[in-house]
Image 1 (cartoon, one colour):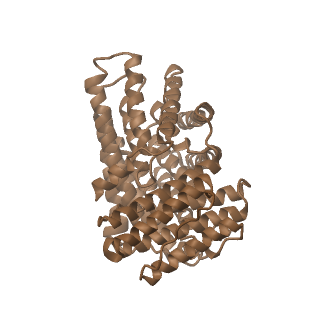
Image 2 (cartoon, rainbow, N blue to C red; image 1 turned 45 degrees about the vertical axis):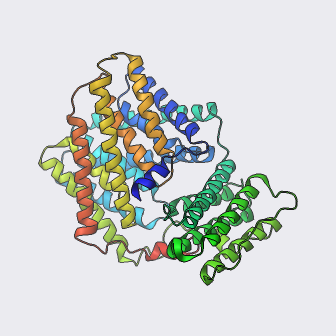
Image 3 (cartoon, one colour; image 1 turned 30 degrees about the horizontal axis):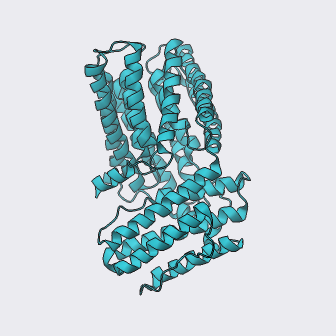
Length: 500
């Protein structure tokens, strides 16, 4: 099943090659500019392209403004701590702990935690840098170079977005909905053939609903249009969830085929509009009351879309508050912050006491995998480790066997083009695997672009992989082995019930 899932996630989809080439072109432009101007952090600057090159113009602009906010918040935290406790080790350790504790707490209680997540990643990086420089001014220089990266990356991303043709947000949402309908239709066909299909990733549904909500708030869709889109997407999710529960033998093959025909006709309608005299063929009763009720609700949602009526209960897109309603009373949030902070600072102490500064990725691993869901944590940790290992193998292979034979700028650009495109292909794929593409790119750039000249030293990438492993072990100890009931979801579920 895992191999089938990976193979399916790597399959070409409409627009995927274009998106991959856009990210690859932007990454190469940033890399060449930074190398030609002798800017530091070439690997980090090239990697930032993957984080900021989203798939539609609206999200690109949001990510660019968000990155400025993240960098500003991180700078304030780092400069504040260094100003107060530069020469006082114990106070600096205490302040770092408080910063991480506060950051993890707010990551847990806000609806959109990316602001605090990004800031804590930069703080974790600066925590490592602060132990390597003898003077505060040198640390400020490093922070200043991080700020210098932003306009370079932002300008390049906007330029490539224009060159490749901007993806209109509405068009992106349409393609996303069509793709989800196609996946569920394919799953129904496989059930009709007696096979168990690859499960539909619920994050894809949630991402499409959030995109529709965002377009509604931006005025690109009316409130009713966004609600009707969300209603159909939730109906699709309920349909696939019930089908997974029933299994291939839960309904006759003809019933699965009939549902697939319905989804195919619905997708055709959304793409081209209704054909003259042709209606969507809805299946007869299946014998399962819950499945029949889901199909009935989906049909009513489509009828409301055709008539322009307001959406039903599943189409409600209520504005989300900034903080969870029980953020002052639920002890699970403090518990989450305490364990995440313990894991992060524990890895920091381990790195400091062993004087093994090359494994600083252990702290970053703790930060980026501190998700509210335990299953989400484990999946992201697996993707981070898997992507880093694959990227390291590719980078080391290119360094040892390809670049010595083609020791020129053209050889380096060729290698970077191939490896960046492979990483971008994964990164612009389904949400189930996209993070592995980010890690592949970062590992390759860490091997090939850590300095302004090629190096045959393999210690840095070895230490990076060990650091990721140490961070995963620390997070598993804090959230699984020592506290298996660590992820209470009461507050978030209260707000997410209607969305699911």
